[in-house]
Amino acid sequence: MTEPRKKPGVAFWATVMVVVAALAYPLSSGPVGCIAGVELWERLYAPLIWIADRNRTADHVLYGYLRKCGVWAGQQPATP
Image: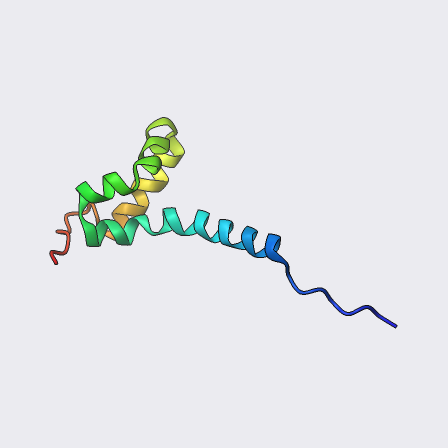
């Protein structure tokens, strides 16, 4: 007889949450920049800016993504 499958435990779900957060933080930088404006964006995403300042590939990826989202492509930030 086969053993029943175990349900995912706490360690599995904690790992899933860490991976989702690690992906969501940089991916949210473009939309947040369009909504919040550049000054607030620079405060919220200072770790990404720090990495981009020290790595040419990260710089191209981050600022290319921001241009695609319209942050530094001449779009005015939305005012609340």
